[in-house]
Structures are given as structure tokens and as C-alpha cells.
Length: 128
Image (cartoon, rainbow, N blue to C red; front, side, top):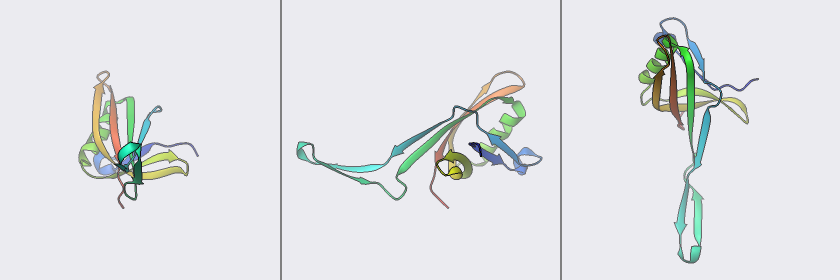
């Protein structure tokens, strides 16, 4: 099974059938552990994990040189899901796992009249 970094745009947005969009190679995942630290004198400190899901993760994904219509569908999907979580399939040690993410922001580059690119930052959220 090959690594997948993708999500599905529903038919209601595409105006046809569901569209699976796969991010370009070279995407990045940033993980920042959340730790509460109490510092005392002489350099002594105590640390404890902050919460049950103590890893903040973000993904920076790109869709380069795609047909303008495909980029507009991705943009519409992000706009329809402002503040809402959606499933993003990521490759991890378990294989390909669906994780809930929200789109923090995105940027469109107009490469030419018919081809555009979009870059998005997705933040993992822990919810059912």
C-alpha cells in the first residue's frame, strides 16, 4: 500500500461525483509536544504532558500546477469547511490513517490562465 495524503471533495461541491485529491510530494508535518513545566530554583524543574492528546500537529500541503477547475473545487471545499473538521488521510506507522483536520489558511498562486496552485496549512484536531 502506498502512502496517501489526501481528502475527498463531495459531489455537492464538484457538481459531479466525489473527487479524491492527493497532495503533492514534499508535504511537511510539524509536531510540537505540549508539556507543562514548573521551574524551581537552581535549574530544577518538573514536567508533565499537557492533556490526553499532547501533540499539536500541522500539515503544509500543496497542489501545484493543477487545472484551474480543480483548484477552485479545493478552494470551495476549504471555504465550505471553515471551522469544521474533515478527514485527511495521512501515512503513518500504522499505514494510511484518517485524521481529523481543519484548514487554518490557504494560498492560491495563478501560474497561468488554465493552471493554478494552492498551498494549505491543516491543523490536526482531536474529536470524534
